[in-house]
Structures are given as C-alpha cells and as structure tokens.
Length: 257
Image 1 (cartoon, rainbow, N blue to C red):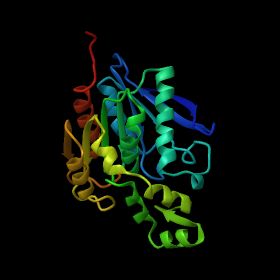
Image 2: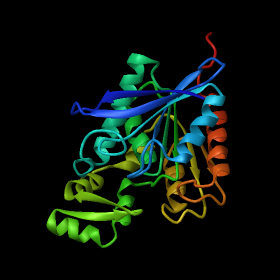
Image 3: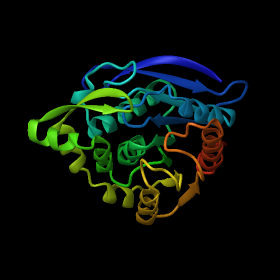
C-alpha cells in the first residue's frame, strides 16, 4: 500500500503525527480513521496489518498518534479520554479539508471507546468498528493496579505499563469517571461492528456483550477466537482487517447514483 506522512493540530495547537495509507492501483472508495490502544502508537504491527487489509479493498486509512504519544507533541500526563476524543474529531476535520470526510471509524481497546464517543461529532461517519474495546472507558483504570490509590491520594504517580513508565494524573481518572458511555452507545445511530476475543485477559469478552446489548441495530459481533488483546499474531490482525473491510463496504456508498 502507498502511504504519506502527515501532520495536523490538536485543539491546543500541538502537532499530531499521522500517516495515511492509500489503496494502490485502484480507486479509493472510502476513508477511515484508526484510533490506537491506550499508551500505544499508530505504528504497532496489528494496525499496519488491518490497514493493509482495508487498502486492498479500496479503503484509505488515517492512523495517528494521540497527543503525548509516539511522534506527536504534548505531554501524556496532561491528556485524558476526552482529549483523545477531541484528537479524533480534529483528525476527521483534517481529512474533510484535505482528502474526504471519514465514513468509517475504527478503534482498538480504549481507542474503541474513543471512536464510539467521538462519532456524534463526526457526522460523516456511517460505520463504527471496535476491537477489544471496553464497554466503559473507566475499565482502563484497572491497568493502573495499586497506583490508582496513589494517584487519587497524591494527585499523580509514575506507572509502569507494558515495560514503559508513564505519569498519570488524577484528572485522568476524574475524566474517565465522567463519561456516560452507555448513553453514547445507545444513541450511536451508526452501523456498529464489535470484534473481540473470548480469551482476552486484558479487556474481557463481557465488555463486547455489554456494548452489543446496549447498541441498537444495525450491529454485528465477530469473535476473534484465540487472539490476544493486542492481536500479536499476524493472522489475527489480517483476519480482523478483512472482516472490517467486507462489513464496512456494505454501509459505504461506493457508487454514485
């Protein structure tokens, strides 16, 4: 697939780093945005594989680093779930101005919750996809372990997450607690595809059940069988990508009337 590196600003004027993956040798039928998982980046292998599967079907994909992560500017400690949602809306505005407004929103783990929350402010989106997403973004606080109490008591703490250290502030926890995700899912008014592994030990399969039960039709669920939370096996991420592409094209206008 062809790709182009790009940059756009968040609401604070900080520069976010992204790339757009484009179909090669065929017409682009739709544009999608991909939101990565908590403390991840746009460059993890699973996202690359999913993006590759989408571009093969004519779907261009914008993936970017949230504020304070990867190659994007800003301090991670000053970000939260709401700022991730704002970043997604700014990404959609950038696409509308420079390419085409996105019709598909895809999010992995906490990024899945973020695309659900941002959809209301991205009117061009007709299809939303979650991969291993929590039904409530507050679920991510479980990853903080005993540090959560320290953060609540002292106002901040340095937390080890997958071998990397991040400063987490109390405002991050407060923001998670303010999100009304059930209402968001109930009023999504978009086609929804939920992908989740029944053996996911990071975000349990019960989260997929809650999202599915809360959402209105059209909604679909696909099991990722033996996949781990990060879809580390290439076959799992390529499978997810092929399913997303086939499903999304049903809801995207690929032909003019």
